[in-house]
Image (cartoon, rainbow, N blue to C red; front, side, top):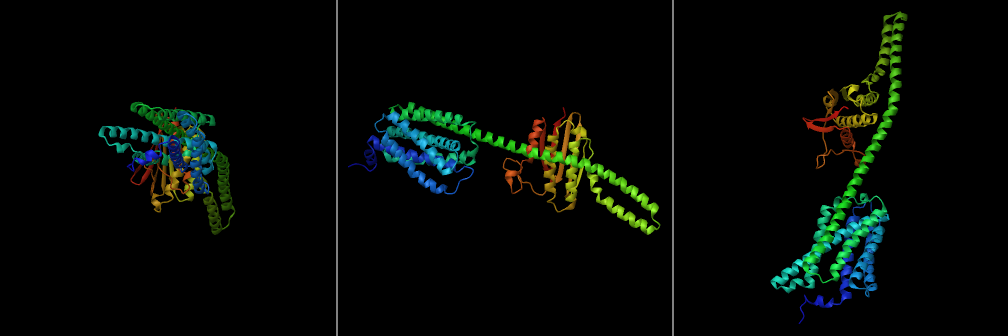
Length: 460
């Protein structure tokens, strides 16, 4: 009597049926792996779940048609053609599910294929190991169809879970774009040629175990290298996007301060003229008034006028126009928010820097300080201090203030507390980039509830 473990081997003994089963399983495994990457797409359009439910039977039907249309072809050629067609069809289905362009769909497809192929190669290696154990131990049941399928299921679940935790969940698939569609096509074609070619060769030929193991290992390693390449491309693109955003924000800041520079220069002239006019008016009133009460009342009015324009005493005069603009603007802002802002600096500390760097460096630093201090309720802590000292050819800059809370990521990077995190949180990044470009260093200390940002820059 036939054992129930042997029955599937007999049922699938014919090549077309076995090939059909393998193609259906591989197609489903491929689509699942690609959907894992599709979950990392920037935005999934409505109806994605419904389209996924449609894509699964379409994939199964495509696998069936591929097998039926290639029965007459030799084993190796049939395997190459079937898997190539299924991969091309999967690109179209991913594009349908995600409603994305062809380049993104192709990137998702090749990454998903790489994970699926690593799992398939691992499963084949496990089967070789189990077969070796079975031949040594005499347990023929270990090589049965059912055991092989259980190994396949367990291996695929473990490999997919491992890649999700290690790679996919932190992978920004939208940024994994090569420089051109031609580069992506060349990479995709070469990957498929190596992996499908090697796997089909191993499947069609009766190879010894060491040779088959080497072929499976090489194809799996190729796919891992492809995934690492896409990961580096995504990381590089993320840094490029961040740099472009920082430069854009600093450009807006530069334009703002350039406009403010003209306003401050004009206001400074008017302020000095107004002070002289008040002084002349006070002298003329004292001579013309006949009573003491009238003089006192007039002087009181003039004192109120003088107080109303005393805000312009905050105009900085370090000797560097760009530095003066930043210090003046932040002094006025701090005064409006009842923050005591003091600074000790001169033009020698910054006269070698470009206006762009001055605006970006000190503007970001003082913005962060004001934002932190204005949240404090204790008026004695609403203080910001800036010092810029030149010692030899080193510029030593410190901006210190009290703070309430600081949010940090796991790696110690400061994180914005604003709700719109996508548009904020680049201040420290921008300052660090400028400091490194100028050959200096940026350090942050947070001792005794005091946040101190220190910059050491070599003056050329």
